[in-house]
Amino acid sequence: MVKAVVLGAAGGIGQPLSLLLKNNPSVTELSLYDIVNTPGVAADLSHISTPAKVVGYLPPDDGLKKALTGADIVVIPAGVPRKPGMTRDDLFKINAGIVRDLATGIATTAPKAFVLVISNPVNSTVPIVVEVFKKHGVFDPKRIFGVTTLDVVRASTFVAEVHGDLGKAPTVVVPVIGGHSGIVPLLSQSSHPLPSGFAQESLEALTYRIQFGGDEVVKAKDGAGSATLSMAYAGVEFTNKIIRAVKGEKGIVAPSFVHLSADKNGGEALKKEIGRDLDYFSAPIELGPEGVVAIKSLGKVTDYEAGLIKTAVPELAINIEKGVSFIDSSKL
Ligand SMILES: NC(=O)c1ccc[n+]([C@@H]2O[C@H](COP(=O)([O-])OP(=O)(O)OC[C@H]3O[C@@H](n4cnc5c(N)ncnc54)[C@H](O)[C@@H]3O)[C@@H](O)[C@H]2O)c1
Ligand SMILES: O=C(O)C[C@H](O)C(=O)O
Image (cartoon, rainbow, N blue to C red; front, side, top):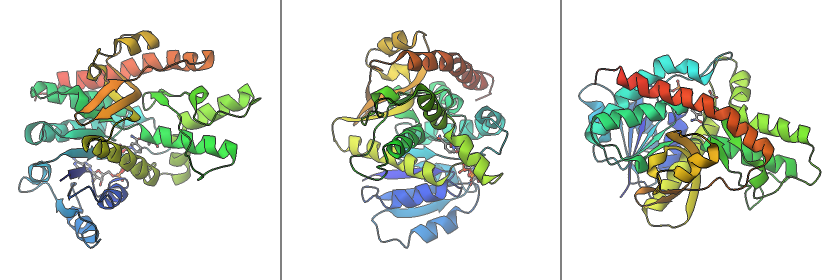
């Protein structure tokens, strides 16, 4: 039995994400919460002949609490998306409060649920969730994840395009680390190495495209939002990995932005690799029935990749601190 909850379920990501979760036969209950339209989205999805029982909730009558009761997994795509010219950090002033309030609901109603944060800026919203959970005395670093899977999906897609074999199995796997902003693709570790003689200039262009893939979509949507469909695909890919790990499948590894205390050694090895005592970082993590089992080493990186990490780290530190101090100064 798996109860999955989507907070922000009526939105551009929320709707296709809910559809894809409804398509997972392991999900037995799908609970949709938003400030608008969830009864309609739920009624629509409930006509699909997969096992999940779908219910939509709105804020009145304790809707959030009802939606979250008994949750195993909570996915959060609630909040505003970017328009052209904005950075993800520009979303903080609206999304920080939304994520804080939803996190309070989870901490008080379903503190043992796995929490998957999609709302931007992820580098700050994950610390917000963590600080709320700490205030309620229910923080478990193994169960709170920033979803960076879209960066991995983009890297895989763009590298497959270089090889001219998009869609062919086995899928390209590229570890993408850092944060969501401060994105560092480790192309030297791609399961399908770049062609020999791939020029440094082409490597830099490919790296840039992965790092700023979000801008490409924001620009193309021209004011109508940011990535929704590819994000729903990526969000469900990560959610399904958690479900498989919870069900006992071994050896599942995926990058995610987590509190480094989730690692059995407190992330000390990773901190040495990145050269700074950060509390959060996106690195490949091994998943198990209780969430994070271990945070993997970054392995051998090239000088170019080491430079990208060095550039990303100070920005990450600022983003993390912004989320932490938002909760420090919030009256909870
Ligand atoms: N992590 C990633 O890789 C990634 C990728 C794409 C988008 N995002 C982020 O995801 C977020 C959502 O994007 P979108 O395109 O779906 O936006 P959207 O505006 O289409 O949908 C957001 C939904 O959140 C709902 N919402 C607002 N306040 C809420 C609250 N207090 N409780 C519950 N629901 C609430 C809205 O009603 C809306 O339905 C944005 O912050 C965006 O930047 C992250
Ligand atoms: O870029 C955005 O604003 C949305 C998302 O973070 C993305 O990477 O597509």
